[in-house]
Length: 319
Image 1 (tube, rainbow, N blue to C red):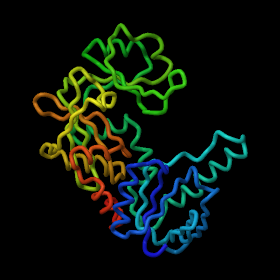
Image 2: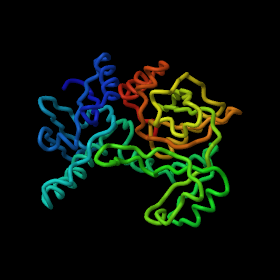
Image 3: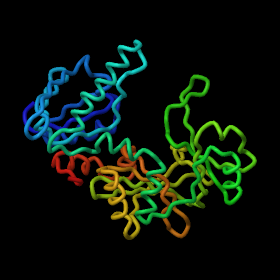
Image 4: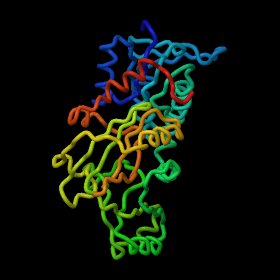
């Protein structure tokens, strides 16, 4: 592969990554796309040696080869996990070796921009850390309780209208069918001993009139106002009924969001806010690898070009 490549780590069915890769192809930036969890070691070969200025060597996937020391950027989107649940002890051992070997080399490339670094993404996915960072950056945050104590949960939910939402949006099945756990109102009388079985996040319900998704790429912020039908708490449950419009960040918000990402070492984040009637933005969460492609189509936010700019230039904001 000629030139300084961009490595794109993601699943092969990833329409969002497709947009970015198409833009990089248009700009004639060489791209090596692969899914570490699926490709290594069956289709991919790694040969990496220590060098004076960092790892040197090559990564070959199929008939395409990237020079590790010349990699300008790594776009870590949504790769599959290294398989650990099939084939017993030997397969589990190999999967951990693959994650620490290939994953370790990919996380330590010299002079490489990470959008974003896998370890930074992992750290930023913890909601308690997000809420703490948001408070420190001066964002408005709803009162929040994390507990496995049913009595504490009852008291909190009696103090104000409250919602429950999961701490992690993982896969969940109901009677064998994929399902999602949306944020939903919860009353004190609904809380029982089941709360003691795991950590739960309860939050004061913001009296919102709309939502905002603010997508931050480097130091640029692209925001869309999302309006759902009255009474809808979690807009993700009503995609077919939503309307969108582009919206500007309030004064000082852009700088706060960039600082928030910098505190985690991130170059990208998709922030969710609840907007009240007085125009205030209430921080709900940040997805360090969140979706944005549907908003680009809905309201023309130029996120693809902004991401391609960062990957093409290969300059880290946090060096």
